[in-house]
Length: 108
Length: 251
Image (cartoon, rainbow over all chains, first blue to last red; front, side, top):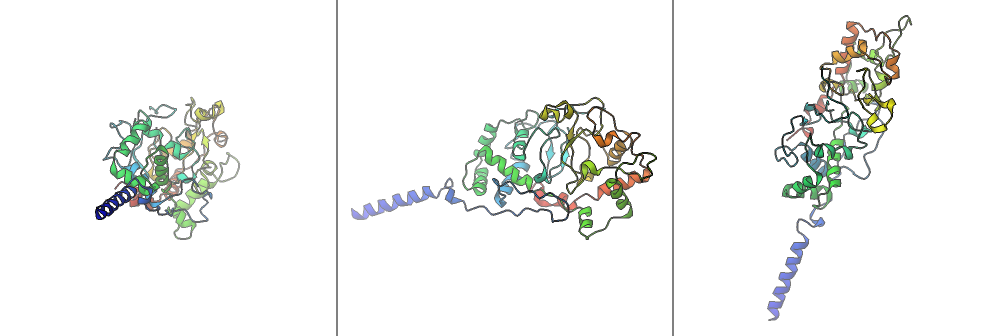
């Protein structure tokens, strides 16, 4: 019976280890990689402003933000096609109108 | 409303044309919830994200664990949007000695940077753009009434509550202005030529009109060549590396 106890102990230890290393465990994810922002060189007149200190950029964070911002196919966010929604596939909007502001759309 | 392009937001101080959002991380949540945009309560948005294994892993990689919260949603969107920078226009390259402007573009730059000259002053004509669109950002990041209407919409008054801010809207950067038509907060102008003509001869007076525009009685008096040169200069502010960068476009 000592052999069985050892096997049960090992099985239990292995189970604990698997739970501890599961996808919900912070230890399962390595530290994110620092993202080097493409900032303008000196001499172009840009103000010297720092990146928000409480949200330092990481490669993984920027990639997630891009995915959240640009993904339409999976429709995580769009409940229905909004008729005046901005269609944005990059820095420049393709259709560039939405009606939500404190002014009315201009009518010629 | 005319949606603004998204670049150099690191240097932006308020968001939306009327400035009602004080930070980018605040701004990014508003289109998600807005009934006429994406119309999704944040709780539901988080629920959808949490139900997607791919997003759980992506949040884990970005933040160390798979917890998906409003703050992390804000942070991720903020990181991506702040990464969109633009500083490689031909004008920038000329400042760095790596390119040169054509004579027409240089004349346009001179007009851009020269103050308005009253009739009879003896000084050369100036387009007086730099007061609001000066500096490396090509915006002073203020809210101004640029003479579009005599009857004023709310504008920045919605933030300040001051009647003196009525009709004032965010002064946009002129970087990449050749790519961001239509123009003005309501998109009333389709071309840069129309925009230049507005400042040349179309300013409408009102109680909160920008002080520099108030003195331009009779308009700027730009010639056809002046206007063409000004537009030529504005096109030198286009950063093609931004528009074509695969990092910034949908996969």
